[in-house]
Image (cartoon, rainbow, N blue to C red; front, side, top):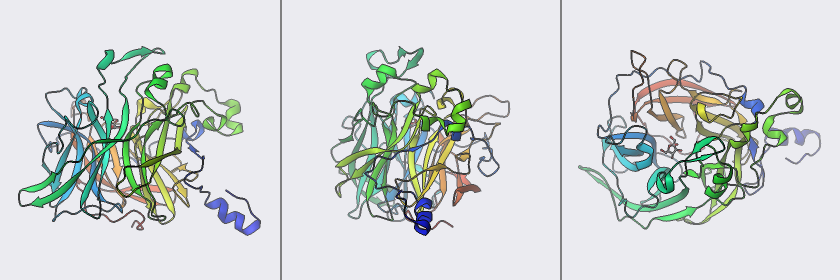
Amino acid sequence: AILASSLTSISVAASSSWNIEDDYTSIWSRQQAEKVALTEETTAPIIDSDFEDVAPDVWVWDTWPLQNRDGSLANVKGYRIAFALVAPRTYTWHDRHTEARIGMFYSRNGKDWTYAGIPYDYDKALGHMQWAGSAMLDEKGKVHFFYTATTDMNANGGKEFNKDEWVQRAEQRLAKTTFDISADKNGVHLTNEGTHQILLEADGHHYETIEQFQEHGNIITGFRDPFFFKDPNTGEEYIIWEGQAGANRNHIKPENIGDKEYRETHNVPEHAKFYNGNIGIAKVLDNDVTKLEILPPLLESVGVNHQLERPHVVVKDDTYYLLTISHEFTFAPGLTGPDGLYGFVGEGGLRTDYKPVNGTGLVVANPAEKPFQAYSWWAAPDGQVISFINEPLDENGQVKFGGTFAPTLKVSFDGDKTKIVKEMQAGEIKPFGPYGRSLR
Ligand code: FRU
């Protein structure tokens, strides 16, 4: 963002990136969010409501594969491994969040998955329940198991009434443990479970704490979904997560609304100030990924959307795609958008001037006829996108509960455009390479 003379200023302007430590946060403005719209390139095919359950005894939702440090898909003696949130089907579909744990799946062909149960001792795990995370296999064969330690949503009265709305108290912190991993003809085994430790808590400055949330909260707070990412262009490592604006940034600035012309005519509903999503980032300081330096958020949606969930990154050469899932119901008053995978593209580095992809911001949207058929899309470095079947409608238009792997999609990323190019099998994961390898 330095403006030099003539020629150089053009290239600098084209790649406006900052140092990762810089206090520069991209903004998803109300003006940009007004452009959210379904298009042919970004609308997912309809999922057949006659689907099979990958693990009939448990609800299965947010899913992530075991990746090597460079982002490529881990291969342990010919097995691919995935982790997913699970809860016994004895809980209702809606109560599953309150008893969530992380289950393990393995597969030899990336299509037929075996559910191997919960790999950790949940009396030792942190939080009343464990929410989404990511998993990295290091060069010494250790699995780094990142997750969200979430307190009991029902404790202390559970929900409380605040600013005309029921809010959920669940406090979330970023946590991890480690395992050794082995595989034989009986499957994949995680052993030698390490201690569980908290990696990071909301600082109150850039990121909202539970106490701040209780002052002015809405829906539920967010400090969750740690995603490990090694930047292929710098070799630096980061944890990225879903946060919400802390004291320093929890107010609607002119930029959160739009440009000057737009602001002159656009009226921001009063209640929009309670929608304060952001995407957090911390720098990893040690090889064991236990020491983190918290940094200002990469992107914020203050006044626009309350939740930027499960953020993750796809890199193509010098172009960075910051991806996140969001819901229709978390858009601020006066705005709307589908449950979908949203993307922001920028050049030159991870802290960059992100703009919504495709002009709309959408990468994958549920079709209008089945607006809640899938959720929690996660894009691998090569553009394979996994998700889970959420609440599709059956032939009679009745809501059916999913809780299993959805068909994988293949998405192409090209400059500021993306496109769904293929539908694969339910839960299918083909081997993929590291972040930063050019996507074909
Ligand atoms: C997305 C999500 C995550 C969270 C989990 C809790 O589907 O809201 O952000 O970790 O579900 O069930």
